[in-house]
Every structure is written in structure tokens, then in C-alpha cells.
Image (cartoon, rainbow, N blue to C red; front, side, top):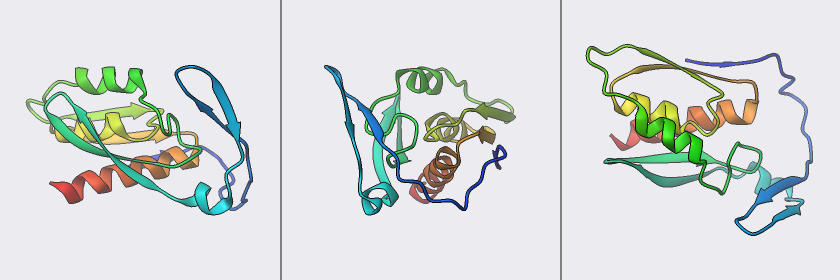
Length: 129
């Protein structure tokens, strides 16, 4: 189950996306078609091969989010299965890893793009298994 904060989701915005690289920060203005394009990339956390959905505007798009990887790797196997609450779900990596470990997940983020990324990540991993 995904929850979103009180946001206006009907408006369309053209925004500058700040892309972080290892050496410097760059800013670029994506076209609307690029901004709307969702990508799914393979990610490995420990022994788990997962897929993560992202697009410009989603947390850690095009970069490895070290804190999410550390959290995902630290999720214990659920014995017995329980419910995990994932706050600030971002691209859904932590939620997908929790599901892979047997947890039921309730994910939450205040940004609509992150909520949709988490939905798509969970769907991509459900389709893969």
C-alpha cells in the first residue's frame, strides 16, 4: 500500500533537474518527453537481483543512493513475516528488498514521483519473480 502526502498532482511543471556526478554538479532542462520517460534498471543487493524504476525528478535518479543500499542490505529475513513501514520510499529499492525478504510493505513518500517510482519498482519485481 502506498501513501502520498497532500500534493496537487494534476499540474504539469517544467523544472530544472540537478544531476549529481562524482566530480561536479550540472544542471540541464529535460524535454517533457524525457521527463515523462520511466526507466527500469537492474540492481543487485547482496544475493538479490532487483529492478528499480526511475525518471528525472525521482530521488537518486541516475545515481546510486548509498543510504538506500545500506538500508536494503540490512533488512533481516522476516521470520515470521511482518509488516515493514518504509518512510521516504524514493525509488522503491528498500521496499522491494523488504518484499524480497518476506515482509509486507507499507511505503510512504511526500513526492508523487517517488510514490509512482515505488509502485513501478514493486510491480517490476513482482513480474520478475
